[in-house]
Image (cartoon, helix red, strand yellow):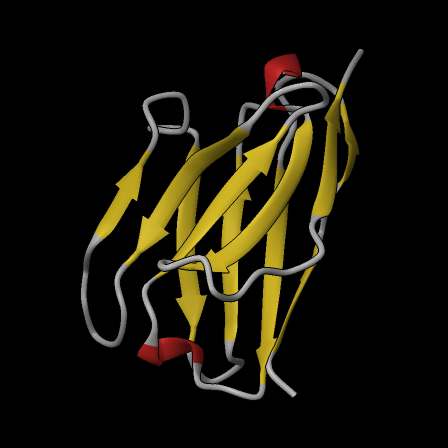
Length: 115
């Protein structure tokens, strides 16, 4: 069964950090360009970051993510990551991993940033 399962979300104070994981099963993650998107309550889906497939060094970030978030992938573990640093209240959202063409998506992991 082809599946993406996110984890690592939680409650954190402003300035804190979290590392989100997206475990893939049923396919090789390295064969796909992958991305993270997020959705805050009452708002639309927002692109966060993209990583290229295979040995590509391509990484792209939304302006709000540059310098604070880092996307990476561990092919041996078939897992995608998103390191979130210096979190702000406006980063609170459900975070989803997806393949680049949006044909695969996980169930999401909630990130809440609040003092």
